[in-house]
Image 1: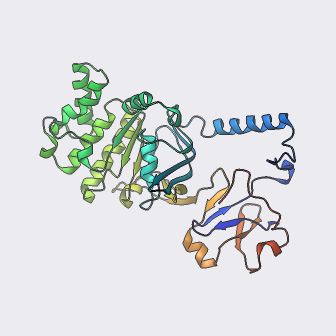
Image 2: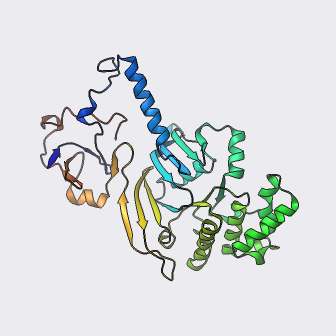
Image 3: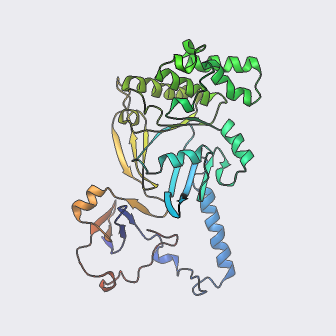
Length: 366
């Protein structure tokens, strides 16, 4: 059994960080010119390796968020909404995002929708680099690459237009002809089981009908990604099930990738992948297998902690508090797992052999 008597816990976020540099990796590059930094060839090689790693991350995926950071400043106070979030979503997935209020879910969705820009890190959707887009490019992106459904139906539909006219509007803005617009609108309303609402204005529809028409509006220009921020939040359980069924239909019949933010356990139980965000980072993923029952819920579910690219792992607070884990932990490498043990010494870090001289990972850790 190989022991590695180091690792540290961020007490506020219960995040364990493991050093990533192996002994065989050689000396670290020092900013003051010591070590290997004096060799320009080595610096060039390091830069090339870093660029390659960055470009290879999530290669081929539809949505790739790489160490995404978003910081807001209000009245001189900085709020870190996203703190190095990593996310990869493949083409054709139907994925749920969950998390407490203020965890960063809506901030992530706004960035993916092209409504906000990241402070640092990178994010790509369908090959588009959202961090480097101009305003004109961002507008074209919102019109053709992503569709968005808000929780509030008033933000999705124009009250003075019928269902058909609402669905046709994005097509009209994109320059589609009258016949093509009408045909596409009729197809989508029929697919989403709201063809009977074609001539009705929003005030003449139920809440569920309004949201299904809203999904039709979001799908009008055949986007690659459909983003839905709490689309069932204002609906009763039966109506919510019908709206989520419309999202499932869009995913299955049209092949559009769907990413939905939800607090509804019934919704998250009906997707194969649920991603939990905590403190601006992806914390856990729940994968479900098997076939759905009569209610649409999938079978066996397994929850995994997410190990990000910096080697950080968020541990559930109920686990760390029960074991008295704080400040630092001891790691032990077993043949098939890594053991995480609380520090029982009670002495300062500097007095512990083998710990005081340990460096943090190169890219920083909390």
